Structures are given as structure tokens and as C-alpha cells.
Length: 478
Image (tube, rainbow, N blue to C red; front, side, top):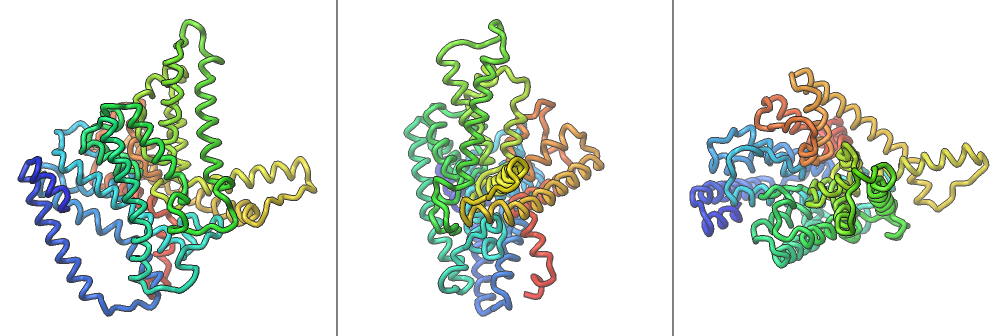
């Protein structure tokens, strides 16, 4: 909170600085008092206690983060601000106040910082809290977290060591991208917010995304490189989760991501030559290159659930001639990025497990006596991994349908309920901007609708299996 306070002191307005300074000071004092009070507390089960704290953080932190925001902007509803902070902390990135009066730059900075801190919380929690329980995708490949190897650490040492390992890489990537975007011609605030939004995949922007950049192609190129690194946890080495027996070239997540992105871009690009008549087609080398880049950047952005749309996307739509290519982006966002990363969605590893199992079953139909092979890791992926991925798919599908029914019963029409449900569970707020229907004004939603969507964002971020583990009686005995 001191960062937006300092920013408001330097560039104004001062009335924004005071609530953040006082709020940060009060929160710091309360945190110190809580740390002193619980210094000698020793839970029966350290891992379960950490899991409860991790899940509880997504329910407790948004109201606390919303307090200085509301004090600085008292004319805005606290429920709307809570919804926006939940969206930022879960890296969903809903543009809650779109169409409203412009927010001060310091508020935009705060929203981007909350998204960035949420991404860091997710990375630390994925490797140090969820992985020991075989949650968050670790169950698919039977991966081992740092906590499952070597010396078992005290709870505080365990989390602090994970933070010290992950934060330098996370912070350095953010700073390097920020400097690169400044060099490309963006303003300092826009570059900083876009760097925070890219590395955390929150997609929060003070200027409406990449459309507001001063040097679109160079800025998009830098963002594209960082987004490609967020497809897999391997960008952070073994600091988050250790997966034995697979080289990065054979990583099923990276191979599936590359296959899907290249295939979709090739199909949409070639559709220009296959289906469009000569009178409807857009011709020229520059439009072709612009369309190809628009396809490539936007598909990667939505696969990582960031949701940035390339400035060349309109050119790409005109080139392909497809009536509604947005459905492809929605499917990519639901598929999601890599496990133990800041990306949301179902996750690439689960999709890879299901695709591998489907391929194996087709092989067995054609050649009943064939042997799967390809090593222990591949067998794990298509057997237990595919089974667990299917269970998760059924759970998340049921919850999506349940939320869709709840929103419809409350009174929201189906055309608005569907994109809201998909955006909330996949943690891809910019999906709403792809809607062909009338724009959805989030501030006009009822309190119950916002509460349901907030819960959906948390479930999508934590994954429903983590909440199931928390609700087990054993967790409360800890």
C-alpha cells in the first residue's frame, strides 16, 4: 500500500495517498501483532494448517485490500471494490469499472500490484502448499515438491525459503519487462502495470490493454516472450515443483501448447485462401504478416489466461473472414496454461493427459496387441493422470453448470451468464470484451451475482480439489 501512496504523493492527487498510507500502516501493525500472538503456536498438522491458511487468504485478503481503495474513492460501492480486488488477487483481471469515471493512476497501480502479489502468492502456494497434498496438477505426473525431498522444514522456514527462491526470478522478470517496455516507447506507469499484468497473467491495464501502447509491435513482442515463459513451471527451474524423468523438449505441456497454437494460427491464416472469395479477401504482404502476428499473440495471450488482445487482431479477423473467431479464444482460455504457474484454466497438463489417453485408446482399437511404451512418465500420464484429469474435468464442469443455473435463476440472461461463468472459472476477465452481445456492466450486477462470481474466481484459482481437501474433517482437526 505504500507504493501507490508514494506514487500519489509524487504525481498526485494527495487525497489518494492518505488512505493507502494509513491503511498500510494499520495493516502492518495488525500483521505484526498477529505474528507475535501466534509465534509459539504449533498446529498438529503443519501441512493442513498451511492449506487452510492458503485457502483462507483468498477470502480474507480482498476485503482488507479493498479498504484503502474505498476510502480513496468513497463514491464507489464497497462490494464493487471487493469484487475488483478478488478479481485482481486471483489474477482474473475483470475490468470492473469499465464505462465509469476514470480512476486515478495510483488506483490503477494498486490494482496491478494486487494482481502481481496474487501471482506470487499462487506460485509459492502451488509448490510449497498444494504440491505436498498432490493438488494443483501435481497429481497428474506424481510430481514432487521441494517439501517432499530432502530435509523437512519448519512451517515458517518452509514458506520463507520458497519465497526467497521464487521471488528473485519473478521480480527480475518483471523489472526486465518493465525496462523493455519503457525502451519500446510506453510511459513509465503503463509499462510498469503491463509488466505486472504480464508476469502475473492478470491482464490488468490502465489503458485498456495493448491498444493503448505507443509502440504496439515492439511492446507486444516483449510481452509475447514473457507470456511464452509462463506456459510452464520450468521457467522457475525446480524452485516450484520437481518433475523427474522428462526433458523440457518432451514436456507434455510445452508440446501441447506449441501444437495447439501453431495449428490454430495455421488454420485461421489458411482459411483466407480456402474459403474466402477473391472479392472478399484482404490482399497484401503487410496485412498477411499483421494477421499472422495478431493470431499468434492473441492465442498465446488467452491460453495463458492473460487476455491481452493484439492491435492486429482486427486485421487478423478481416484476413480470416471468420464470423466469430472469439469462440476459439474462449476455448483456449478454458484450457489454460501450465500447472504451478500463474495461468488459470483447466491446465495444459490435464488436457495433455486426456489427449494422450484418447490417442492410446485409438491405437488399441486399431492394434489391440500394441504396447504403449514411452517410459514410466508417459504411462503415469495416460493412466492415473488421465483418470484424475477426468475427475477434475467433471467437477469443474458441474460447478460451471451450477453457477450458470444460479445466475439464470437470479435473473441474469443466458447471453451474459455464459461469458461471466467461463471468465470467472478460467480466471480470464478479458473474455467479456469478446462478447458479441451488449457489453456487460459489472457494476450493475446484484450483490448476490457478484458474490457467486467472486466464489467462482476463487474456486477457479485454487482449484476445486483444494477446497474439497479443506472441507474434509481431518483438516479441521489440525
